[in-house]
Amino acid sequence: MAGGASQQRVLEAGPEVHDITGPGVATFQAPGDYAWFDGGDPLGFDPRASLYHKLLASHNQGVGEALVERLPLKPGELWVDIGTGTGAMVAALQNHARSNNGPIWIFGIDRAGRMMDEAWESASNRGIPAWFIQRDLIDLSWPRGMVDGVTALLLFHLVDDLDAILRRAFQALKPGGRLLYAVSADSNPFVQMIMHQLEGPGDFFKRGQQKIRHHVVQAGFVIEQERTHQDIITVDNPEAMRDLISSIGGPATRGIRRDIVPPSTIPRVFQLVWAQKPSEEAS
Image 1 (cartoon, rainbow, N blue to C red):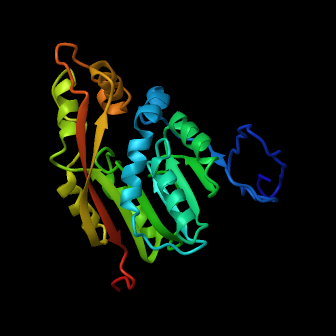
Image 2: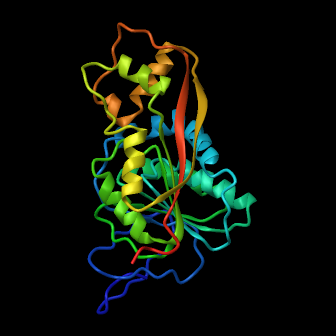
Image 3: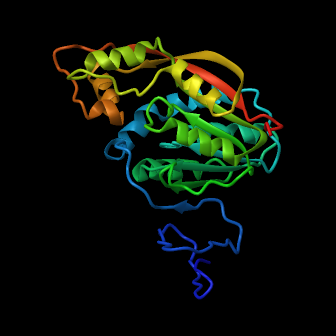
């Protein structure tokens, strides 16, 4: 049911997308697993969403599963995945919750609608509820002190206003709540290979792992643990690697060089970090 004080309307369950405009409240009158709240502008990944999901979703989910390995969860916890993309981190949380005292509540937030189409479709097969919200992270109205955990998979090196995002995450978390994030390591052969393949100068990363860590600490978080994680991307031939590079929003807009043959196998290296909002905020 959606609407303001003067108006209510019942939305039938099904695959349709319903627009909810203006202020109001959506109330679920019967148990439901998946809802997609649509609104916001694409980040640039949208035109390549299907290809990106096909080529990288399982690899990125592996990074997410490494990030949440040994993460203690309690039934009913609320977790928010920011910059959720095609849902690799949501999938990792769902799988972890299923084998560790689930269920939990999971919300994925991103601006790229087609990416979230992919996330929504794949999430429906995992048995742990997930909801997806298409919004800009800065414009979204965040709750205060209600969230148990926030995850960010391969996001913080790409966004413009990292400080604003971290402030909102810190505000939303309960005292003692966790921020778990994974970013490209400063020495990442996969990224170096991509940069070598792109036309024109420049880097598509806004910042490296050490600067990200500094921003996280400045936002008030305490670093609990950090470690590196490596996986290997293997494709059938160099052209398939070009397709993979072309599926990544930022690099793809630069164009791919044809005079340099990319490798068919390349390692990726990531920094995995657990940070915590202090249990007692300084007065």
